Length: 380
Ligand code: GLA
Image 1: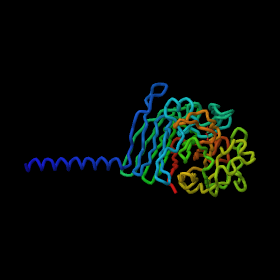
Image 2: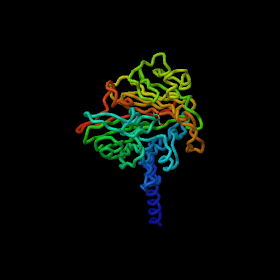
Image 3: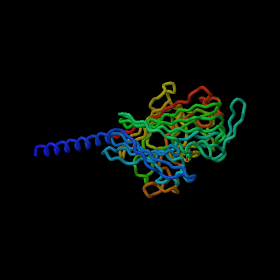
Image 4: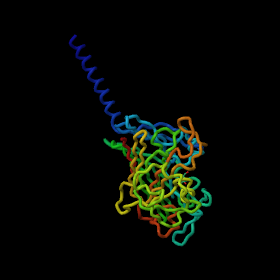
């Protein structure tokens, strides 16, 4: 009889331990992996869900390094998805306006798709009016990346690697690129970009997530309050190429040095706003010598969600979703209408290869391209 009691007691202890262990594991930061589909060429694509102990969940796929969903909490503690995207890979392949993707080799525009290096002229695809945009016809947003998961006690990282061949999309040099997404328990996602080349080339990587902090994709983003730590911005010509002027934001709708509602001045009669059909400009960020520093924030007073952006980059493209026109179906059954998402793309200035006065975007053999941007969420 004693033996039976002992056996029963041991069994209970063991199963309790297992339950505790399981709960403990699930409460730690971790990654879950599942199949997401096959590309048109038949390549398997996986989804990696980075979860932290607070409940934040970031889903990303190795096609384009796309962040497909990002669950963050509102002021009442409800976690909801706050990024635009699709439910299926085929929609990302066929019609995505760069939702959630890694952009390269050159984020933003290069005038007429031409630039010179060492006296040699290079020609890139012209895929945006008369200009080159976001790396060309098959940029880094449309390739399948290799992956590695790295998890420790307090962080979960997905390391994405890609080798872009010499002259791929017209860019010189074999470029080895790594983008590392790291989620921690402070509700921060760090995006680290690294690259090396074997021939002089140009590079400007960014992340193209469209946020709508209300988590209601049927709502536009005009009620968000934006702050951009920049005293000046880059006016553009009618094709959205910077004119070369660095203009002070003072007394213009481009002054976001104090938190301002997007709605407040977006419809002002202002030539730059008319060209962009809203905000679609690069701001010249302050404190460029300080490395990683606070650069911008977005707040949705309805839900209480606050996004803060930190970066070591010189510029940020604030794009108010002006090309969204209701033709794309949303994840939740509606449509992505005009200005239903906004992007805060940390980067070098557009068309830098052709603008002598802008900071350099060249990368030479022996150098390492390294940059970091952090997206931090909280609620209030
Ligand atoms: C960037 C550009 C915009 C637009 C979007 C994608 O933000 O600046 O003009 O091309 O990407 O639609």
